[in-house]
Length: 100
Image 1 (cartoon, one colour):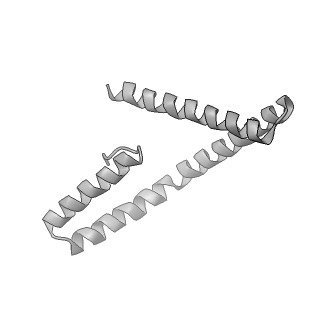
Image 2 (tube, rainbow, N blue to C red):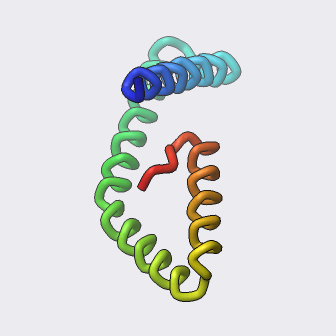
């Protein structure tokens, strides 16, 4: 079921991106050649950013773990649990899921 929901979310984002690009191309009155080239530029950029995110992910996770450790030293167990719930809710609203 989770895989199906993930696919649906991905498909909706893909449609949304395609729709936004079409609006963008229409507003700029791109000719077919420009449209192809701009799509390639955006695709290349997206790939570069994905690579960068993958490269930086271990360091980002390390910083998050350090932050969690520091927060646990300050918050009571109940506050820590409440904080985790709040964080998970925020992640779910952003579409990233809440599990860590």
